[in-house]
Image (cartoon, helix red, strand yellow):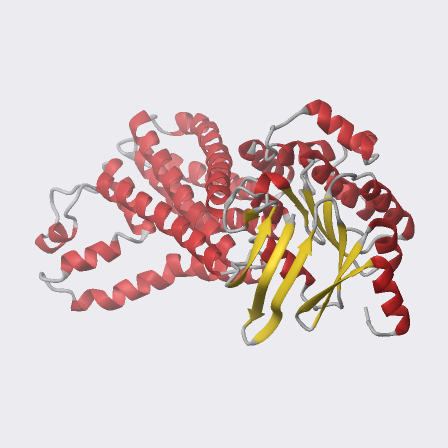
Length: 264
Length: 223
């Protein structure tokens, strides 16, 4: 019921369609531009360009759409009705997360399969590379939806939410990188593994690293010794570990914050 | 049915409820009255576990509110709810029906929507509903749950006299239910309730409606 309700709400609103329209226009530009790519690894370079575009778009859209869906339940007072019937906040958040993830990820998966049709006419299509790209998009959506759900649980109104979402997006995209760039020169052989753990906690770093490697655009065979020390696991393992971390921690924090405060 | 003992609540240093004691007996219709900001919603939210209760206890239908088992016996209609504006009336009630103990029963939904005179508007999106229609849809959800205890937070707030009369006529059909509802309107309290719980300065005093009205006329109570 939650998934069906979420689908009806999202599909009848404008947010998701504006997001999709922006993604559609930007993707078309990238496809047209990638006609000039060489045939060898041209398809993979095109997928990486598409991902780089989505890297800016998806976190912002996911954060806004998923957090608003939680804040709306508070503003509409529907959450209060649930909590006085069968639901606890944990069970509500779990069902809501499943519904939001299913609807948003479903829409983007369908859209990317539609996008695969013109791709076939531009570059030789490689299914394995396309599936790796799709996995990267799904993980990106999943993590930022989950962070959005946490922010929605934490915020009490839309105004507060808008500020926090923009700050979070800016933080992930720029501020964290500035912190890493500041710390990097002081890293040594002894501290690099510790640094790498924090570096790969940033989902944007890990997903990009996984995708570059999965598309064959970044080989792990010719890395410097210090970078080899930093990459002490397969990129796929990194991907699934951060997926787990960024699913469980925001969810548990959302439940914990709710327990501490009031539901209004 | 509803037993509140020694309930205290505060926001920061400001005490809202001070050792509140209240008993609402089975099938009693009790109005919760108090000035704006007196703490009516805080009391209701504490009673329903929406606010953590640090001091005092609440028992609903014999079950402490700390446990979840009271939920099948209680329905709550919040103040200023909007439900899901992009869904139709039918879709809204169908979704909320999925939280009922017996799940979704389309015949019961049909009867409930007819009872609140929204059957003809069931396929219209809720964002096109008037305030009165929205309140009636909220009541329809409560009627669908058919719980022993019904708690309503200002169900007639913001309605015109006709809308208010419609809501009151629906409430009057609720027989054999324990009802607690907050209100500012004496005429509707007279029509619906048997008792009044008057909340002032964090304390509650309970009266019969007749006693409350006479004290109000004498100026001993300011509502």
